[in-house]
Amino acid sequence: MPVIYSFLLLLFIVSCAKQPTEAELRARQEYSELMNSFRFPYTLDTPTQIHKLPEVLREISGLGITSTGELGCIQDELGVIFIYDTDQCEINRRIGYGKSADYEGVTFVGDDAFVLRTNGNIYRVLAFDGGQPVRQKHKSLLNRKNNTKGIAHEPNKNRILAICKDGYAVEENFVERLAIYAYDVDSNTVADSVAYSLNLDKVKTYAEIAAPESYREVFPMFYKSNLKTFPIYPSALAVHPKTDDIYIASSSGGLLFILNSDGILVHIERLREDSYSQIEGLAFRPDGTLLMASEGQDEPGQLYEFEINE
Image 1 (tube, rainbow, N blue to C red):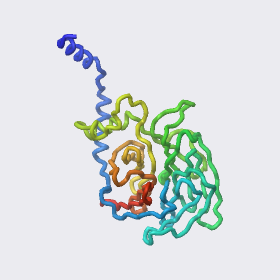
Image 2 (cartoon, helix red, strand yellow):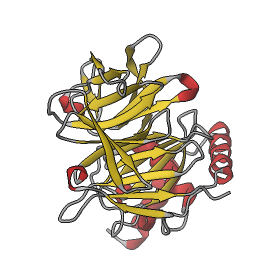
Image 3 (cartoon, one colour):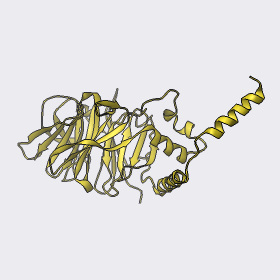
Image 4 (cartoon, helix red, strand yellow):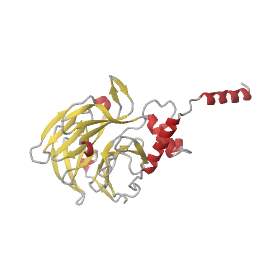
């Protein structure tokens, strides 16, 4: 085809492309302002403390802060909550709650512990540290295909959030996107609808506003050719105690997503893959200190602490 015709064809295609409406432009501007108002409050290149975890926690799969301020951890094979003393760098007690299985997250509310299994079941362990814990099992629409990977308490709504690694079902159709379900603490029930979600369009909009000149280089995982599914698999979840922001770690892509309390994506932080290659646990101390746990491969698991930047 002659060059002049190719050029005219390109002009025709561009002129026929859908132009954003005034409402869409206004919404994009408002979203840009929301993103710019967010300040990531941690310096991830310089942890305040680094702990080498004991061998039994090499495959750590979740952590949370108890009502007494202690750090509770689980690993993905044993039905045991490990209370880890970060001052003494040792486990000071072990609390059994169930048989061996694939457990992927733990969080604490009052005297109770909530443990997530990879098949979507949530186990509520009543008075977990009282000497004779009682376990309740709660099922949801989720199952092993969803591959649930993280759990956290959302205090402002008094519910437990559980995140799916491999999508979720809508009217029996499997949908590929990052999705979070909720378990209501007061009613002791798991919701049948998604509480928060992220899809490819949302993260692309964020990327193109955050790095307008280089978004494909900064976030190449979102722009691979023939990409039809959400390319990032979450591995841990936590809710910030001061802001109610939702933090989602993805060890597969080396990213940390932050949603505000309305579930809107406000920030993506890159994680150093040489340091944080397998993040499997997130938690916050009441003062805002961020804790990240990395599963060990040929070496022990690691626990990182980051004080909040005031």
